[in-house]
Length: 387
Ligand code: PLP
Image (cartoon, rainbow, N blue to C red; front, side, top):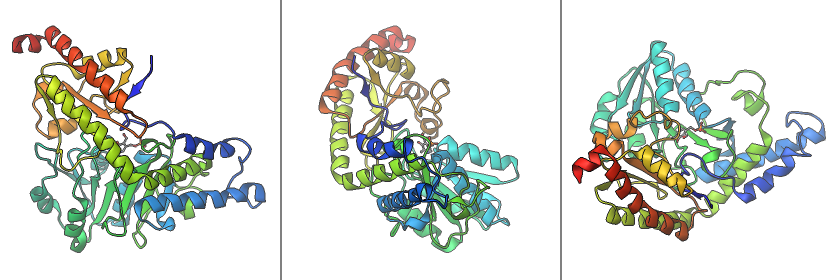
């Protein structure tokens, strides 16, 4: 059975072009870029070339890019750096719908004496800007807000928020792990100080990420050790993956607009058909300001996990909430924050597409979903009540 992979916000496949570019660095070119001999030293040039490509995707300068091991490390580093750079300030502002890599790090800092304000969102998952401006005070070191939500795809208005923060002397970080490579990002215009991205969400391997730190921003390293990354992130460089991330960013940038419209076309076809063919279905999240590849649909009165199991029998991979939290049946904190009713939260399924998905795959899912929903509704006590 052929797999239909509609779970690209959890992780993506490595693009063939990326793998090809990485291969020499997994085999014969295994040197250490810090070595003085040519065998190792030649890799330094390759790392710098990749840095330029990552910078190119987001409108940054190469020297503003620090390679890390993942999005989580980039987020943790940004937050830690902000609080260490502004030691007199003890307050962090973030949102109620952030990834655990931000939420749990803020909670960790709370145990060390910091304060966090989690800004609420409305029913569409949009940031409550009225609450936001009230939350900033003289003690605020950092505002950390995601660019786009991993569960719903909702995009936050970072430009507007950045403008509001300009006069406040507060550092501004964005977790752009889901946005990078999917929508245009231009740090020449966007007033953020730090930005996180992750390779495995944009067809590079797992275990590589990057943190953008705007020139002139005070920075305090998280990983302490050798002098790599100009002392900003110690540890021998993961050269093959850095090369892969560079190539993935280059590919994403080159085809960004055509891919956005291709994915939006596929996603809208899937979403429109499922809403039409399945009873009691609704989309979660603002459909105006959303990643082009993501739809989060609640099939009321049934269990999302049961839908996933049935889809799995057809070779279809999707997700109920974020992959990091599935496995536990705890309701998604994102949908809860959006005040989605419990019966809709439990029946929510996220479909997230990539450039490798096809019309035929979308048609297959449209063909099987109504039957799955009907069948599960008959089995579910809520569904029986409803019928
Ligand atoms: N931030 C967001 C919005 C994510 O979706 C993820 C991964 O799901 C992360 C951070 C963590 O990235 P990584 O898996 O590279 O640590």
